[in-house]
Image (cartoon, rainbow, N blue to C red):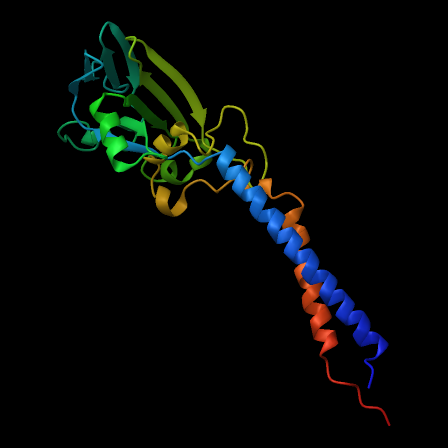
Length: 254
């Protein structure tokens, strides 16, 4: 018995959906591969420096507390002939050795680009002194207890980066906590994913592994997929519905 007109239509929809699904999936794979080739993910390796006095790029680096004003403690950073006076965003609760007492708001990090390197290449890069050094601070909103609301009111956090450059200068930049969502373009002056600043700031975020910044898909492989992603989804749905109606049992008639 020849199939009914409804089954022939369902079969046509299923075949068309499968063909379109195959085409969209193939194009999706090509687009994702192209994106990762042209825009690789950058992964940085960080090492925390806990000493208050050390050398970098052949120059002395020191970090000293300045409590001459009890209600406004400072941290004095000296790098060679350069110096910066930092406001202590979160006063230490305990007198701990090194910089442990300030780790809630300050980290000194040596870092190097790790992605794309073998273990041998990575070790050689460190031995050659190709790492960079940055002092990162996190400032919670003013007027709140840094131990309570200051740890959860994260959209008001401000991060300062003081990079010690090989030419004996200190480069400073300030970036805010990232607030963009979904595939919106990151706002100017905020932390952006796939940068060393973003990854360094994570070191200072309480519970960053559990409640860190929401992932933003702007400029991601998901955004690079374009129309092929919804096309694959709808063609797959059409193929599934076509197969369901194609093999559905016949309706009973009197």
